[in-house]
Length: 205
Ligand SMILES: *[C@@H]1O[C@H](CO)[C@@H](O)[C@H](O)[C@H]1NC(C)=O
Ligand SMILES: *[C@@H]1O[C@H](CO)[C@@H](O)[C@H](O)[C@H]1NC(C)=O
Ligand SMILES: *[C@@H]1O[C@H](CO)[C@@H](O)[C@H](O)[C@H]1NC(C)=O
Ligand SMILES: *[C@@H]1O[C@H](CO)[C@@H](O)[C@H](O)[C@H]1NC(C)=O
Image (cartoon, rainbow, N blue to C red; front, side):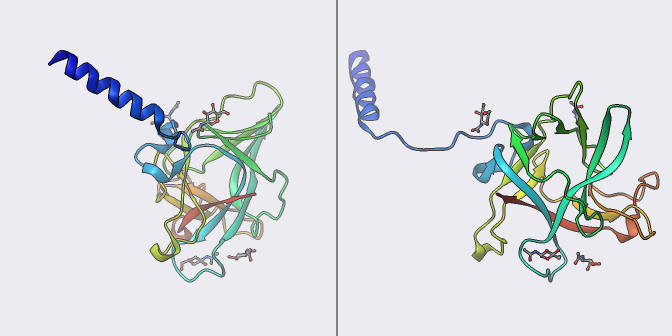
């Protein structure tokens, strides 16, 4: 019995080593990918983001281009949010990279942790850059037949469905920023009644 088992194991080992190596991308390990299944990926060499209005129709399948908009500064560092280019027409920091579910740009900008009801934030600094929060993930689009646009979606905490665009005021220089889990209890940082749900699309370049 024992030897038959051993022989069987040997036989299987033999078969396994005779098979060609299957080419497969490593499964993502980022906590940002939890629950997203086989279409998830947590490394992207260069990408930008665009907001696709969930309330159809959209002008095109890309959606509104997003840039890093200003969100204040302290000595030695400034804070950024994701703003529509239409509301903040300065693409000063084009091209982001995702590494192990953290968003970075060069060695001076990282995405920080996200709190529900707030703008996903970034810090830009040349001194003491913190590590990026490993909370993001990409999720490949369903096929065109499934109603997808063809672009992967950005997730945070394994969730692609909680992004909105919200204006931060009513004036001529208002910025329209991405919010995670928009809420009326936002300390006046955006106008909840004017938020609308979007998918954050990953445009790889
Ligand atoms: C993502 O990139 C990092 C850094 O290069 C690497 O260590 C990691 O294995 C990559 N992850 C996947 C899933 O390929
Ligand atoms: C997205 O849809 C909302 C709700 O219909 C609408 O108010 C808003 O103007 C749309 N935004 C864009 C950029 O098309
Ligand atoms: C897609 O439509 C948006 C408006 O929602 C516009 O800002 C953007 O430039 C368009 N993109 C392309 C590739 O045409
Ligand atoms: C990041 O934020 C989430 C909820 O928004 C929280 O559960 C988590 O503990 C935070 N992580 C760190 C490292 O602060």
